[in-house]
Length: 360
Image 1 (cartoon, helix red, strand yellow):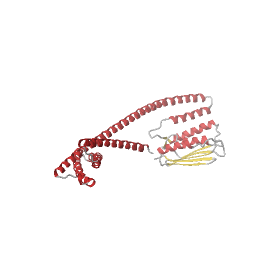
Image 2: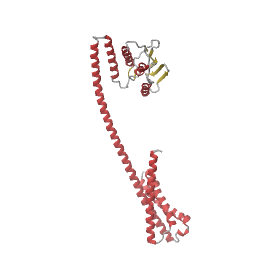
Image 3: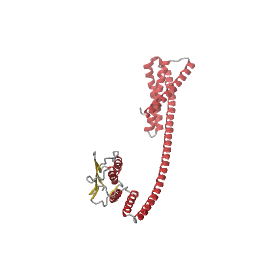
Image 4: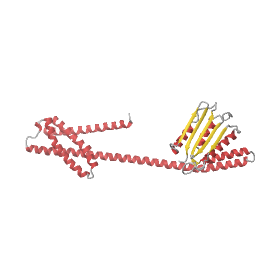
């Protein structure tokens, strides 16, 4: 069961029990007082009239007052007029109701008795309405206090969120400052290694340079549109291929093809390399008869990336899932509705085609 429903139900029954107890005490007090003063107690008469009084009490508080204060600009004046009309109407209704339920023995026997009865009933109605009005004001005060408490809690929550936001902002600034220092140290170190290794091994120096270029691209700040030139993303793939070929002594069987010009086109950074990395991580790249294919075709502002590779027989896990899932989320944010994936995951091979419109 819904927790809010249970809470509201519990609150309703708590309030109902309080009202029943309050009316029980009030009615018991009045009947006892009248009996002690007059020695008469007609329960039928009391039951009917107290029922009418209770109806009047809640009608005035929950219907008349709420209606007048919400619907009219001059609420106080209109409310007074409605209360006067309410008193007159209730006094008029009381006599036929008493006659129908209790009979003519409770009806006034003379004109003077009728006038006294009207005055007595009017004062009684005014008396009940006084309690009802006090009850309505108490409800409004309680609602206002509860609203103030809710606003105060909301203000405290917002202050707490603001403090956490400032704390996170400070942490982000510190991380940004660290990022400014660490890449600087990294590139200086790589430059030192390159200058040292170039005297010993040209191949080693080239590998260090490729690594330096890859790290520089990965750590370079992106522009305001959160994108980078497409040619830099393609060059990053080139460096990644050269680095892996150096690792495996140029024994990797990979065909890398680029068709079309990437000029003036932009893409979110590290999008294509995420898919290319899967080829190296899960593909069998040392079979000359089944070379992996990395093909990029660019035409009229659209890009098509096609990947094909033979699967390694000793592959652990399924692979390809997490990187593509994360990339899909990024593409959904930046290219909603203008990209498509086509994946063919077979037992011994894997193929992927990404089509992406970049000029929108």
